[in-house]
Amino acid sequence: MYPTDQPITINGVTLQGPHLPRQEEILTPEALDFLAMLHRRFDSRRRELLQARGEVRRRIAEGWTPGFLPETRTIREDDSWRVAPLAPGLKDRRVEITGPVDRKMTINALNSGAKCWLADFEDSSTPSWENMLAGQVNLKDAIRRQIDFTTPEGKEYRLGGVQLVDRPTIIVRPRGWHLEEDHLLVDGQPMAGALVDFGLYFFHNAKELLRRGRGPYFYLPKTENHLEARLWNCIFVVAQDALGIPQGTVRATVLIETITAAFEMEEILYQLRNHAAGLNAGRWDYIFSIIKNFRDRGEDFVLPDRADVTMTAPMMRAYTEQLVRACHRRGASAIGGMAAFIPNRRDPEANEAALRKVREDKTREAADGFDGSWVAHPDLVPVAREVFDEVLGELPNQIRARRRDDVQPDAQALLAVSQTPGAITEAGVRMNIEVGIRYVESWLRGNGAAAIHNLMEDAATAEISRSQIWQWINAGSQAQLASGEGTRRVTRDWVETLMEEEFARIERQEGDRFDDAREVFAASALAEEFPDFLTLPAYRQFLSAEAPLRRELSGAAA
Ligand SMILES: CC(=O)SCCNC(=O)CCNC(=O)[C@H](O)C(C)(C)COP(=O)(O)OP(=O)(O)OC[C@H]1O[C@@H](n2cnc3c(N)ncnc32)[C@H](O)[C@@H]1OP(=O)(O)O
Ligand SMILES: O=CC(=O)O
Ligand SMILES: [Mg+2]
Image 1 (cartoon, rainbow, N blue to C red):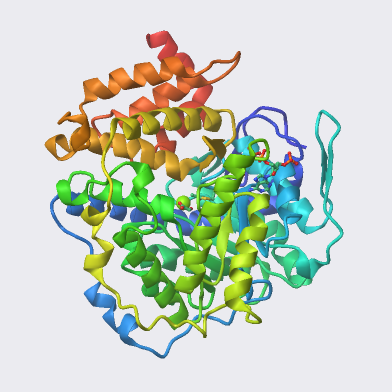
Image 2: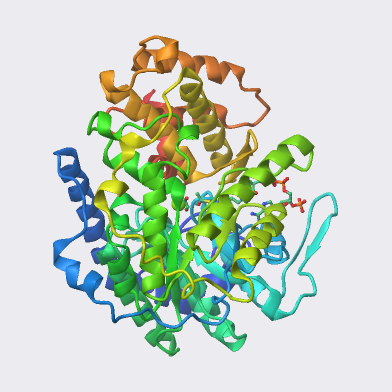
């Protein structure tokens, strides 16, 4: 038993922060040894790759435009290689439900009737130590079918009686490479959140999953290039050897959700080819990545209101079609993304509208050749299933049936940002502010996904909101409001006035976190220096093990 609330060091691994329920089951000395091994072998490479991201960004700011890499041309042109055959539980992925790994949602997702469940430590989860550790407990219990839950009001949750084959395949999404977990230090350095999430899940469950006819499967978020994919591949090889399980047991689906990764889709599959399962079109972070990377490149890269950047915009069509082509050429699954419309059981009209819009979105994806797609809510599972059932017929996927050889890699099409129809409007600026603050408030309370105005908001959509504001302010005369609304520029002063007004409109409740949320949102939307991720300073200020001390010090300084 570890001492309560005191930092403790075992074999160079320091555990700090509050003592959490059942932590002894997860943070066993053997599991900590495994994490320390991963950190010591791979963290310096992670840091180098993060630094390389910064260099690419600097080159883009100086006028360089990313494109297909000349040095990897042979990989793209060689038609002979394929990824490993689809693994058990991953052949038919027509409907995947996504969601955070809290106990109730875990049970609901596993009872949802979806083919797969993306168990999310990332966009939809606040990365508090409590959430991250509880997620590991919940997954361990779920895999062993020993999970139930009772709300304080007495509502009971347990796994339904379906057979293993009908239970969604679990695919875990660890945190991105940028986030650190400073409740676990190795040799005095915080571990990468990604290695903690991957390592603990793999260590405790890989063998059990194999015994049950499945495997340790992962979604890899926010990858920026094929070298980052190579790092993951090296981690998989070492992890499988360390546990003595066969090479190739791990499978990874990589989210293509950065503009640089869009130029390296086949190279990413190639690096991971013995472990690759597919690619996913993570549309929200993709839009964020375009804003972030091209934020100071002038009018060719200024996007209209967030609501106008839809999947039918030319750049989004190019991205999704090229993704299906890359996957099917290499025998991998192409998985569609998240339509943000959330059903509402209390409002039939909003519910109807959400079902209609999601159906439209999934219909386009299925027709484009995707093998399946994501839904955010159990009530959307039947809609997506119906759409894909119709296109797939008896087939489990469209990998062979829709090769999409009619699509060609096309850099110009991926970069056709200025062809996105729409306009910047005052309503759009206000919406970004209001929704951004509301989302951050939810995140600070530990809920990393929220339905706001019947739309799903998570870390990726919040990044779009705050980075659009930043770009519109800093793009100067290139970000004019729609002509019907005069020629007002989006200035910092004006945004601050709108922020005051929107903030005043928000209904407050005892114990809410709106003051903190406004501070976090303003700091990233109005900052002179664009923070790489909204969640990075917010983590340090509010969730890190040193956060209470840091806040105390800044309070004392004030
Ligand atoms: C950009 C990206 O990365 S997209 C992927 C990441 N984002 C996500 O995964 C978001 C997933 N979705 C969600 O978290 C939720 O649907 C929300 C927060 C948007 C809305 O949730 P709620 O406000 O609870 O919706 P609602 O009240 O309609 O839920 C009805 C029931 O469905 C459950 N439910 C809703 N969404 C999910 C889900 N994704 N997984 C499991 N159960 C769910 C709720 O827990 C609730 O259960 P209960 O009736 O037993 O209490
Ligand atoms: O992770 C998915 C996204 O759209 O971002
Ligand atoms: Mg994302």
